[in-house]
Length: 470
Image 1 (cartoon, one colour):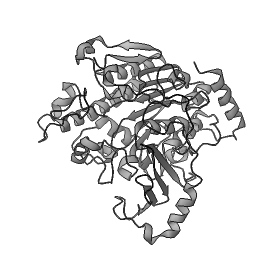
Image 2: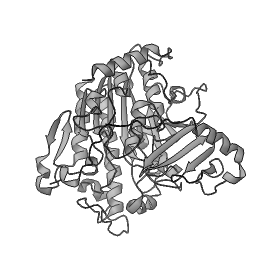
Image 3: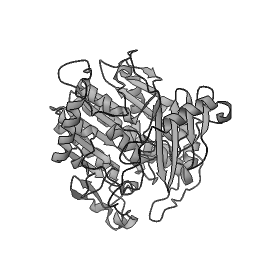
Image 4: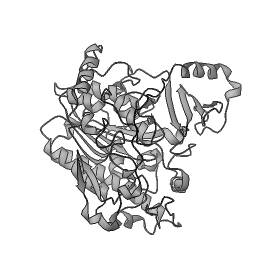
């Protein structure tokens, strides 16, 4: 249940908001399904140019809807990216700005799930949360979700054969994984729960959030997804550098199998919507929380050219770390086969979902509804700036986009680099010295773009492998 304090804050915020234009269509707003991949590069999908990995269901989603070519994650790592998605605030304002897992959402925070719940939606989440663990204010049941199944902590979500998951406040045991056995693939268990939510709520208006863990490392997938790729690639083993995790004997085949398994999940969701006869009443979103995994695993992303030549990986604010796929399908509303170059980011989902649901979003959001772009209308408001930051290890890394200009501070106290994305999408040539006027506009904006991250009286300790695998 959402606490009274949260609902009071939500009602107050909505009451003070100016009227928003309603979404077109019948009096009843559509169901919303949001499918979020984990560490998936946009070019690791066939509809974005991938040649080696087969993703027919996601490709069909794009063919029947709209594909965005300049969509951006909320951050370059998991938790802050999900925080921007849930709150409509970029990382200069959003509550969770680091990836440690010890700083949850607070009771006063308002999530998109809470807004949709206030609009009469039944809300369910199935997968990886990352914004608060059990017995904290960030628990998804205290942040607008009627039900949640999966992982609370992102470290827990690294494991595909844990001995338990969470079903709301209760541990959901996976006995076939006890003693380090590997029989119940967690992603399959989570997916089944998500499908059951759709079946149970076919006659209600629902928000189904499906933040799948695929294809985040560890690299492991059941054999039926490996088989099509086992003999395809010449490759060497890739041991996982973290104790207790599973390394991959065939990392390319394993990764391809993970992406294809997620694609199968998307196909299952779309087939079920048709079976339940609610396909035409449902808008489906698909995206990824950041770019592909770098570090010891970057050779996998490089092999598949998962960034289409862009610079950077997960953990970077260069384009490769934050440009993500975004596909949206809404029968009868979105023109099939559409392609958009509208520049949007995760903090735009809150106002977009609110407008689709025909309710007011909270005030003072950083996001802008991109419903006009979805519907192919010209009257789409644009962002004058997009802003990202992350503080890891005490230092502040930042990035700003202003039109086709992109400024990046790759490490704390380093000078800003400047790139012209129109002529240099790979961010290969730093032109800061040639354009001091542009750099001044960006630095002036950066001085106003953020507030200090709030203090927490207590941070939850980081978990260990033994907490999840035994």
